[in-house]
Length: 115
Image (cartoon, rainbow, N blue to C red; front, side, top):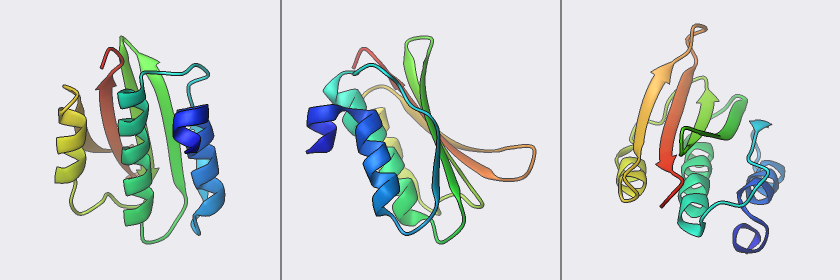
């Protein structure tokens, strides 16, 4: 309900308050995006949070070159991301896991904003 009425930023902030693990939000878009883009980005964040066993997660979402880049950084990556790849891929986007210089895993989804 929050996602549809108030957008991605409000929904991720509400999620951060509701989950039992620390969720640090670093960047979220100020403006509303297309409903399919927001729903897919929220799905990525919420699934990453759900699959995290422990530790602080850092979440960011920002527009870059016509895409919404969503990153969820944690101590480890989700073991399975096929469903995330399918969901993001339906909008012609991509999902990957990369590792930062400190060894933390970063789940990165790129979603075209025109979707």
